[in-house]
Amino acid sequence: MAGSPPLLSAYVSAWALFSETSLTEIEQQIVYQTVNFENECDYCVPWHTYLSKNVGMESEDIDALREGSRLTDERYEALKKFTQALVRLNGNIAQADLDAFFDVGFSPQQALDVVLGISIKVMSNYTNSIAGTPLDDAVKAYKWRKPRIELRS
Image (tube, rainbow, N blue to C red; front, side, top):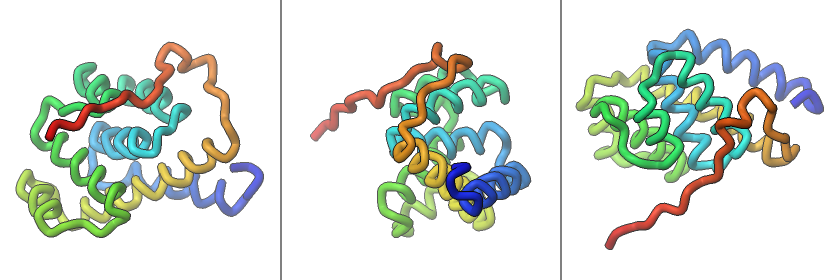
């Protein structure tokens, strides 16, 4: 990112602003890690595994985010599915997806906060893809490759 000072500045500012949203630290990591998974960011998934542990996320949920499987908490799962739908549908969210997000207690503001989290990860995921960023020694224990998920008919 240092190769584009405006990108770096936007990323640093957005990262700080996301921490000020009404999403909890665990919810923020769910958004980040969901986008990392969808964008297949082999650099970011290990780092957010580490960060998720640091904010007290349950190991079952950390593993589920890395594997693309169901989270243990209904609210967390709804957040993951909402984030996933936004990414997969390029923001063209269906009303049913929005309703499911609100039905577990999230607010319209939090829906927009998710958009901020997605934008941060797009900056980071895309930059790491372009740069071919090597994984840091500090998180090599969390090395990751996107698993093949079988779809059932």
